[in-house]
Image 1 (cartoon, rainbow, N blue to C red):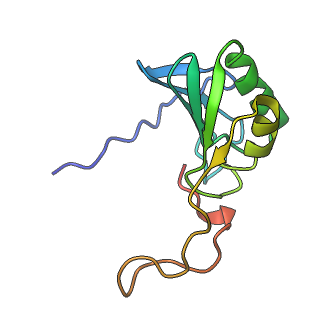
Image 2: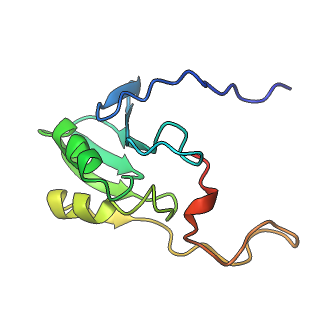
Length: 131
C-alpha cells in the first residue's frame, strides 16, 4: 500500500484564508522552518459560525490576518490539538478578540499507550513539531 503523497510544491499563500474543502479553510503563518515546512497551518471549520483549530504561534501578523479574514463571522470555539509553540500561543489573543472558549485535552501524558511507546516528559518541546 502506498503512503500519503507529500506536496513539496505547496504554496502557503501567507495571510490568506484558503478553501481546502467546502467546510474547511486554512491560513498559514509565515514561520517556515525545518519543523513547520512553509509555516504553521491554522484551520477554520465552517462558515458564519466557525471553529478555529490550532490558532498558531504568537505572531501578530498571523493573528491579525486570521481575525481580519474572519470579520463578519462568529468564532464559537478555539480548538488546540497540542501545545507546541507554533500551534497554541495565539489562542489567548484570539480568545480575547472573539470571546470564544479555548478547548483542548490538558497536558500530554508522560506514558501513553502500551509499554515501549515513544513518549517523553517534555510536553512543550517545539523541536519535534511535524507541521
